[in-house]
Image 1 (cartoon, helix red, strand yellow):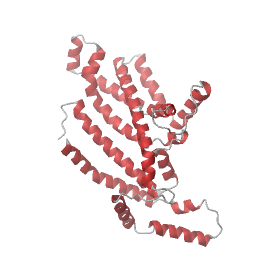
Image 2 (tube, helix red, strand yellow):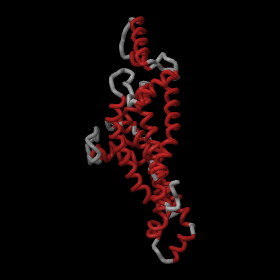
Image 3 (cartoon, one colour):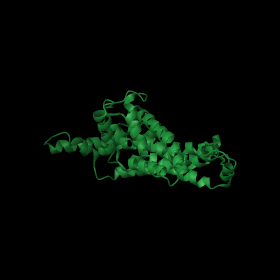
Image 4 (cartoon, helix red, strand yellow):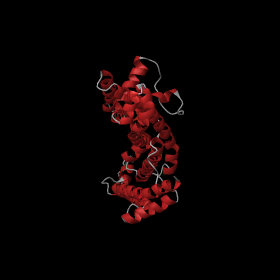
Length: 315
């Protein structure tokens, strides 16, 4: 397994560099000048002084150097573990990511676990009750949450639980994962990918229902749930695990609205702020983390396959 893992990681290096190059290119050719946007907050009538400040900042960050020179210089700093400072110099990019990413990592993993523990049983139940009202209710009900945007669903649930039912206070801030204020954000985080897991599980279980060994198990008189747990679920989980890999990565780096609504100092807020202010160093920093997360989750999914189906070998 170790040689396979090393080969996969080495094969991911060109992809990783390509992602960095594309992102760096897009930020460089952007029509918005981050230095000028940064100085908009300073009111001054001295145009010459403003132009001098802009040019000094551009020289400091090497923004007027040729493209390949900028990219090569940034890669050299990256190898040394130096992600630089934000364009206004107020925060160290690496320190910002180190502080905020663990919060989003915990939230993302918790959301993925809730999605898994709820979605897989619901998908199996929908397959077991195919074309019944239970099937339609599960699939249709979960799709409702998929269609409602987070920035609409979160305020509605806050009104329901805080103002109408009065069962909780407004959950804002971060005091650790195992606190009552994280229940609602994690619940909302898990709702969007829930219908994907339900439908993937339902489709996979229905496909395996038609196989010969399942019919043999039925003729032996085994209950349907025992057949699902012992004979169907492991094979049916292969496409579900693939989907969950992408879902987990998306939950970790994509909780932008939740970070804002619930005042969570997470990675999503850093990402949103970086793109809103065209902060090149921070944009590149969050891109690195996102690319690494995609590579690692794909590798993790590939390593799980042989445990679900022994016929799959890591060669």
